[in-house]
Image (cartoon, rainbow, N blue to C red; front, side):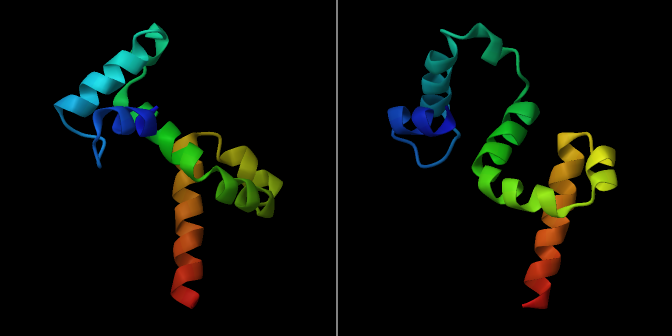
Length: 90
C-alpha cells in the first residue's frame, strides 16, 4: 500500500499531505487498516520488504531460538544483528 500511495501521490518518500491523502483513499475501502497503528504497519512493511532474506535466515536458527523469539521485534533485532556480524567479517 505504501508503494501504491507513493505512486498515486507522485511522492518519492512516504511523507507529506499528498502521500497521506493517497494513503487515506487506499485505506477507506478496508477500515481495519486504519486501526493498525503506524509502528505495527511500519514493522509489517519492513517484514514484507525483507521476506526473502528472512525466509532464508529463519531456518538457520536453532529450534529453541525460534521458539524463544516469539515477537516480530525480537526476530527483527536478531536478524539485523546477524547481518551486521556478517558485514563486519567482510
